[in-house]
Length: 218
Image (tube, rainbow, N blue to C red; front, side, top):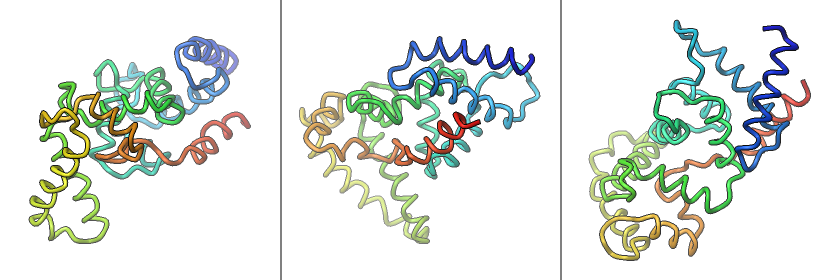
């Protein structure tokens, strides 16, 4: 495809996608498509028909653009972006996910974070989910502090913290968190939005500079 034809195809795709997302305008969507295509070219596959980012490449993107380092959380982000569960994040899934990631309303981000923490897709954040999420956070913290030998001492601390969290957030006292429990808790204390792991990037300006502004200048 010629450069001119490729540009027109991207503009047409941007027109279509911009009608489906809430928080990006057409020009921003076009910039994101260009960036996505560049990331796709960096992904080496023998199957030339692949049209999305695989899990490994997507996690590289999360690390490089958003400075995310928690492998467990990055895997969850991939699963949330990959709406059709085909093992690849398409350009439309990429843009829709980023839309909520960066500019989503609080209601959108509450649903996003709840689905992140609902590990089994049961509609509830269960005790098992909370334990695994807190365990991951503890491991990450110990690794950062060079205290890997303290892993065996964490069980009681995690269980104690889990009981504190449930006491604070489990409003109907059924031993698990429904979306209503989560929503009510976040409404009272917004910091609880990411209670079980950081899954929303804090690098909006960096992203704008590296992706949107840079692409618009080219």
